[in-house]
Length: 412
Ligand SMILES: [Zn+2]
Image (cartoon, rainbow, N blue to C red; front, side, top):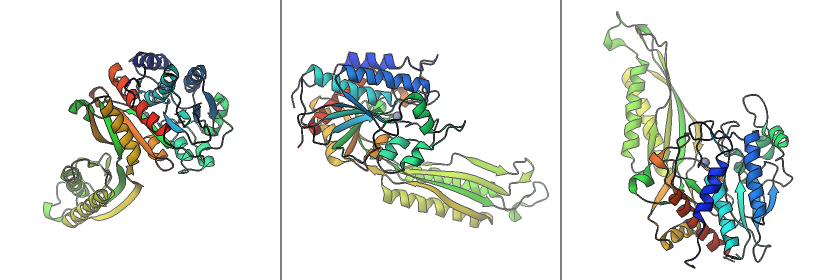
């Protein structure tokens, strides 16, 4: 591919900093919750910039925004990129918005180079990715991908009872287009890593292979409450001791299934939680993650076995429930290869990586060949006002995105 195919890193950075003023916080972060007036201002600015770049704009019924740059043959399905511009209440300047503005920068750069792709190219904003104001996360890309139906999406309510449908109307982004149901030739998303691996390995580009699967469990161990003084050790039914056994085992399961496994007990309630009563009942959660479904299942079986062992040893009873299963996501091999090729052509150090977090791409992968480009973020910190990325890394990630998109946009 032509070596002069480059984006304008200064312009991308200036756009990021300009956008970060909308909802800016004192500590240098951003608070731009979905479908607030600030979200509208950010959308309006993106739309203005895209129109200035010659794009046509479409908005669908979930408020997803699509800016299109025509190709030579506009009957062909577009190559799309995008991410989100909503943030966490104490979010950063890069999470999501980086991917949206990379899409704009790709279009601006193609204009500068007078480069005509065969297929049209689109830059998208997905509504409410964070799930902070309206749960669940990634709901609008989920509707686009057919994971949720439209009514479900529009009826998600915030803590004050305002629905996404009402708030979309209020801010003027309840569009006319049906959500999804149209072909997308390929989808790419650039994003900060939100983890420490690229920085630690001193690599510029993460070639994202997919996202890890998750299994969530809720466990209740029941023993018998008794006085901590008169009750001899050998007759006790201590539910918290059972939970302690499980917590150690879950941590071991994480370590035993490296690389990639994550295993966490993050929440625990002991009852009656009194210093001189043997705990009779303990509730805790288990969160298991792995990119390989077979290993994830094995980890789940090991977790259950650890719970059963704790029950037997401590003479307890157990209620063991799986409450959520999200299968691993494996991105499209040819799109992943296009990202790798782009990074290699540019001479950028790169690393195969698995996303630990959910992204709109995880749903888009169900309806279009999809891949992601990761860049490092300082200290691996995200969902935090101090979230930071360098101008150079932002530029390099967008250069890789440009190449991957152009390759797919020229494919018949
Ligand atoms: Zn994000």
